[in-house]
Image (cartoon, rainbow, N blue to C red; front, side, top):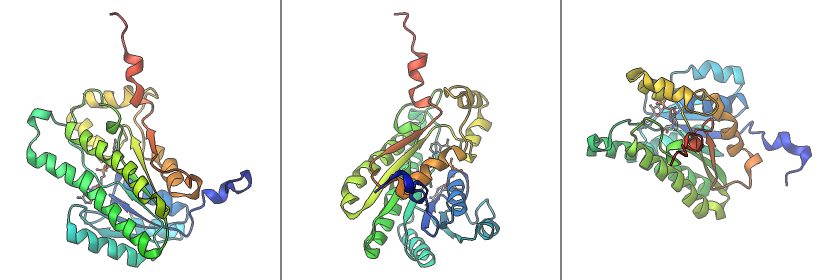
Length: 272
Ligand SMILES: NC(=O)c1ccc[n+]([C@@H]2O[C@H](COP(=O)([O-])OP(=O)(O)OC[C@H]3O[C@@H](n4cnc5c(N)ncnc54)[C@H](O)[C@@H]3O)[C@@H](O)[C@H]2O)c1
């Protein structure tokens, strides 16, 4: 039980083993490095042929292992094999973070079946089956574990100046998946939570800002904290949710948006 005398040990994840999907870059890669810096061994899964970060040298610096396994979260057979490879590397698995995802900023009426299907396939189905594979592993191990799904502010509200209906639908599904699984798997000691980031400075948002400079202003000026988020802003929540510090937290969602998810309250005009 938590007491004020063991708070450090509650956050201690050293020696534990985690899997991070979408771990080649961006939020996934930042989480991989945070876990490794705290002494955990990590397998990063991603569709890219290689990560954007030199995991080998950083693993040496942190005295842990960081392995990279190429995986497509939409490939039914291939994903199972990639997770088996990760299990072989790690042995006992303590947790999963699902970061693999894509975004689409496009008008509803212009969005094609193919675009919508691909987005749901990666963001929803890929998250679903990555989680299923790890839950099955926990069962084989006879252990519980912690699963953190990366949802989005778009599961809470509509972004200013953005048209992201397909993406919002996918992230709403991810957040609800977290709640459904928290209930279904709770009896096995498996905790499932989500993190809902707002605008975070990664390749994903960089592409949108480069294509339309107005989006730079939207991302830096609309959050009440008046800046875009960094991947570093998400790390405390990820570590908290994976560690024993959150042992009674499940079906939760941590919103990290610089306040943007309630910004409409400030913009509300009362000249009616
Ligand atoms: N950046 C933001 O502002 C923001 C905000 C809210 C939520 N998110 C979510 O956070 C997660 C990470 O996003 P990011 O900003 O780091 O973006 P990113 O594009 O930098 O990283 C996403 C990663 O997912 C991988 N990926 C894509 N399709 C895949 C597939 N089929 N199989 C395996 N890997 C695949 C990509 O290769 C990439 O490495 C995504 O789910 C995204 O929707 C991002």
